[in-house]
Length: 162
Image 1 (cartoon, rainbow, N blue to C red):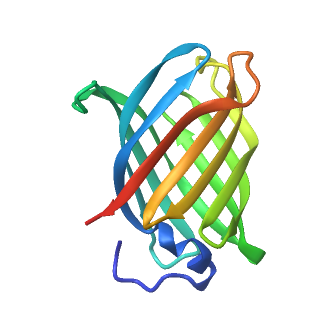
Image 2: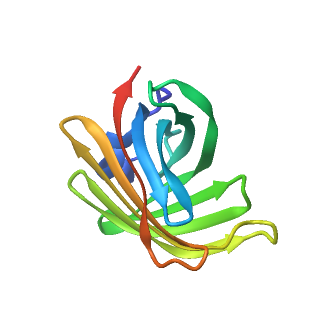
């Protein structure tokens, strides 16, 4: 995070700022369940948005990194009345626009638009919940993909570091 003052519109989501690390679990009807590690960074430059970067990696049974998994980047844009617009881009050929709202330290987001390249896997919708619980960032992510309706996919608990 740089030394610039945070834009007043970002106050409802200022708790996200910084670097978060932790682990979670994933699964879906089309894949086996797995454990993963994750790092998320939220930064700002004084304008009314946060830049966002998430990296995940597969963990073995002992908690060691096996290989990289997904990454996503984008922007979290503050709107009036605690509303949010979140733009996410994935190197797998998917771009998402989420709409949502902030209630205290809870954020709920649903996809408004999903765009895919010709080579991307079939993915049609997402629903994400984020919350600050005992100082940790918790989240759950449901997705609709490959013919399945919104189904639980990922959940994690991350602690603030640095």
